[in-house]
Image (cartoon, rainbow, N blue to C red; front, side, top):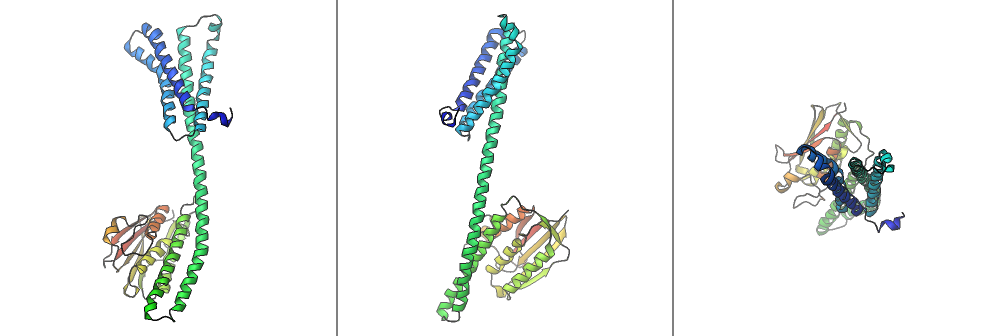
Length: 363
């Protein structure tokens, strides 16, 4: 049957109808032929279950797929599986009693076998059909998700390439203008520069977040001591006014990939962005503890606003006075999860923010 004809057949209704026929046939056979000859209630109930069970499964699944997410073509495929299974075991049952049929001797036992085996084949067929339909649907959803992810990756790359170049140019011209504007214009130039840098950070975070969605990432031992020292050097170079104290022993290794540095570039960048660099001290301490590397990043700034502390790692969460995008801490949490690690927030001993990151070490 071609695809056009399938639209006129709702497989779920035919499956349910076949199940109803099985149930009615089983009940009728049991009532007319089996119950009168059964000597005990237990045996009668057993025979009733045997003759009705598989037909009931077909009936219930027929109703279920009518209300399920399966398309009409997928329901049609379930119907084909169901009727194929029914015909297969039905023909086997008929073949086993073919001699008696030729002799015109149709017994209640033969009819019972036909009903039980036919309903059993229908039940197995409809179960196989539903599983086949769901597997096909899951494959299509996986392919669609992969297409969407690839589109998102491409879009992010375009944004990062074009917008970042534009914002870098804007930031550079703002620095040039600083020497040619009066005091009233300096504040506006500073806003332009600050927002340009914020947009560049947003593009970097978005690109990193997209990369965490990939299925083909390969983790390997990473020299964590070197990563932390590079991030400390980076924040000191970019913000000379910030005081950074670090205790990073040699020989610390974690099982991660090249994105692991984003955990700390975001935390350090947030500390600087939300506090006065000239009055800020950041402390970084890394230790080996119970098969993990525990890293503490604490500062003496103003800390996280109280209203977001309990859910600061959720996407889009930010303080009422924040000019950020609410992506930084979510990205930190996401990366920690990807590496089978964890990140927690506390108030530091100096009243600022304190983050504890735990990452697994290589076996």
